[in-house]
Structure formats: structure tokens, C-alpha cells
Length: 296
Ligand code: A3P
Image (cartoon, rainbow, N blue to C red; front, top):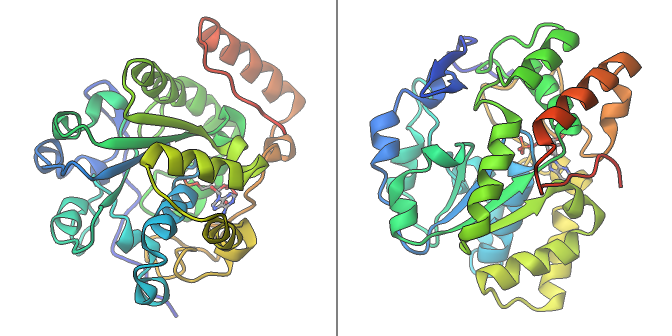
């Protein structure tokens, strides 16, 4: 039997204009003063957009050849520390990063663009952003909040969806998040903006994009072997990648690796919810060059 960590479902509160919980703001000074290194790679996402998948792909691209032990013994969340995370009785994300022995450091964050610590910009770090279409992202987030005891209670799906549209989610509005990073990317060549849907459609192609952005020379054979290991079913069965050793998620309610599909929202949205959502979406995203696919 697993003993759950000593966490309580937190309250959402406004923090510099963004809805947050204390698990991601308690270490704010240290997060903002974080000292990035020039070869650090920041993996940034809105929650549930494919963070874990991207983290694992990058971890294997950088370390699979070099370090065979890593793959057997180190859970992914220890390989790729979560910058702003503070969970009682565990080291903070910043502490984990400060003591990480391997280089480059792969760093996970869900921070919206305006909260990224300034040292990442000063050091010209490369950043990989993953965005996922709003409907699938909302459904995934809803199920995640049901099983993650460090997240606010999601309540019923209808009210959750309303709060998603209103930006009353941990890490704020999906709309602001994906748009904020998109705008920054237009003038910042250090950001690679990727889509979950593209990764599902052709993982190999997107891995090639990653390698060329990061200047990684991998052989087609290496990439093909990594591609196999990062497919949904392989990751779901892999205790190093599926969070089975994590203590804040109650995976009896739902496994972390839930479905991994594009278009699963169709099984969750009612026709009426979909109409309301589309109208709301159109209003918010009308003047945006950022386009998503809700099915492939
Ligand atoms: P679902 O809940 O729709 O299944 P994050 O890592 O940002 O929390 O995102 C989690 C989502 O990514 C979950 O979506 C999860 O199943 C999906 N995911 C994780 N690994 C994946 C993979 N290898 N292929 C496709 N989807 C994956």
C-alpha cells in the first residue's frame, strides 16, 4: 500500500493577476531569483498539455546513450525537476535543481510567460513550449484534478468547464498561457513552440524538429528506438515515466497516463457545452494567429 503524502487540497487565489495555489507560490523569491545556466533547457506548458511526454523525450535524447542507469532507477520527475513546486516534506524544485548533478538540466515549469525567472532570459536558455488544444486540455485537467490531491477539488464537469473558460484554474487561463508564450516566441528565437496534436500525429517528425532546434545530432536509428519508448502504451507501462511512485496522485481514481488521445473531448462535452465553449473560444481567440486542431 502506498502512503499518500501529507497534502491537502489547496484553495485557488489570485497571485499577480493569475490564479494559483500555494504549492507553486510558497517558494516565490527563490524561484524568481533562480540562477539559470546557459545550457539549461526549460520545458514549459500549461498543465496537461504533454509536459511529461516532452520531458521524457528530451531526457532520452540527451541521456539515453550516456547513462544507462538513469533509465532503470530514476523516476522522470527526479530527472526533470519542477521549478516552482513546493510540497511539504520534499525538497523544493529549486533545491532539486541546485543539486542536480547532470548537464544539461532539463527544467519543467508551468509558469505563464510573465513569471519566467529573468535569469533564463539573461542566459539565453532554450525553451520548449508545448501547447494542446483547449478542449482536450480541459478534459485532461479535469480528470487530473480528480486524482491529484495537491490540486483544488474539480467539482462537477460543467462547473469545471465554466471555470476553465473563466481562467480560474491553477496557473491561470489557458488562453492567456498559450497566447502569452506564442507572442513571445514571435520575437524570441530561443523558444520552440510545439503542439501536442503534432506530436501524436507524427512523433518522429516532431523529434527531428526538437533535435534541429537543440542542435542535437542523433542517428535515425537512435531516434527510432526512442520513439518506440515514448509511445503512450510504453510510457504507461514504464514505472519510471508513469508517476507510479509519486505520492500526491491517487491513481486508483485514474492513472496519470489516462488516454493520450486527440479528440477525446468528444466523449466528455455535451452538445450544449460544446456550443457555449466554441462561442467563448471564438471571442477570446478571434484576433489570434495561433491555431489549434481539435482532431487529427
Ligand atoms: P490525457 O489525460 O488526455 O490522457 P502533462 O504531462 O502535461 O500532465 O499531460 C498529461 C497528458 O499527456 C495526459 O493526457 C497524458 O495521458 C498525456 N500523455 C502522456 N504521455 C503521453 C504519450 N506518450 N503520448 C500521448 N499522450 C501522452
